[in-house]
Image (cartoon, rainbow, N blue to C red; front, top):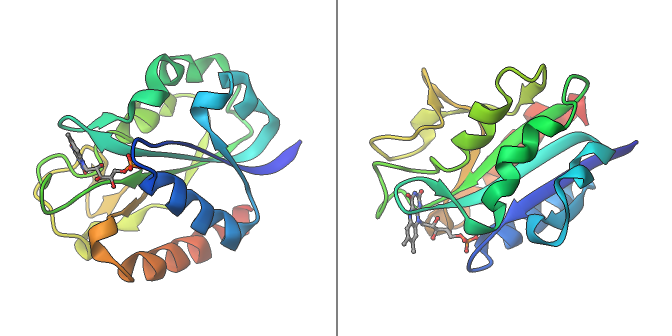
Length: 163
Ligand SMILES: Cc1cc2nc3c(=O)[nH]c(=O)nc-3n(C[C@H](O)[C@H](O)[C@H](O)COP(=O)(O)O)c2cc1C
């Protein structure tokens, strides 16, 4: 089985760039979800599921119906890390909410979710990804510039033992 696969959807390329930045740090394959069938996820022990958010917290379009097919894969022996890309300033009431669909779809799959982050590092009013004082995955915002690198580094450190 392959080790780490980053599966992403993007509209304008920002999520792709972040996916490549993460891959360079953890040594993962980077796959655009629009180029593969959902079965491609089954080949990996650890999955990083990534997307930007659109239209009040929806996944980027290329995830499309594929997110509904996630439960056709056996996740019981897998790790999943969620990474959302969004904009706090313009979309504070749905920040990175789209990727909460990954959590909702897999919550009862037996998967091990890895890589929660502390919500106090961000400025937004609502996110479907929030759980107590945490976000259920790493959130990145292009407008935060260099802060993203520090966020990625801390997050990589926190999931390292599963990679
Ligand atoms: C029409 C539109 C709706 C958006 N809605 C959200 C949203 O609900 N939540 C959020 O966090 N970001 C939202 N964004 C911001 C994008 O997710 C952000 O610009 C992201 O960097 C785009 O990444 P991509 O180029 O990989 O698609 C929205 C952007 C646009 C243009």
